[in-house]
Image (tube, rainbow, N blue to C red):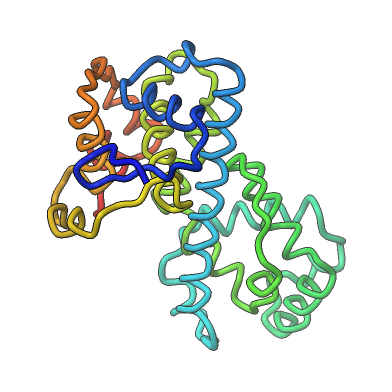
Length: 258
């Protein structure tokens, strides 16, 4: 392990390319200055981290909804827009008989079983994530087979992580939105380094940086890395109003704890 910050150690098995990309991202260099192989690796890491995050959210909601049969409780965090989107997908990919009985309460149990056993639920959820969020999500069979999975997906439909995912995949390669995409890359990349053992973080960092601190743990550790390495950072030119219009999230709250 090599010390690269007051609270950070680098795994000696990490390739130089990983450290090189980390340095460029923390210097706030424009993504257009990165080599093709660097961009491909960054994109792969970011989409993988987003996929992992979505699966964790789905697991959480599935645990919350496990064994619940009350529609009011299951529907408590779900928007009408989500149900309209689900119905639109069903109209495209289901047969006429199913659609004819869709709103008949006495047929609800039959329709639910048919959707699950035919694989339509899995197809519908995969289509939703790819079409709307640009992510090819391979949801574990244990979650897909859970009876309330459609409600669990609806509960995270408007989650901040899904908004970030939609923004990232929609505007990857868009020069006008590059500063915001770069900010997303920087935080997701740093999360990858920590969660996959590339960086080892001292427990003292968690005592210094608490959840109520606005900057967040990643920003705290990134600053530690930059100070230790004597690194200067290019100014971050973010259009805060544009970020809010497109994601519904302010630039300050994009990766905050709240």
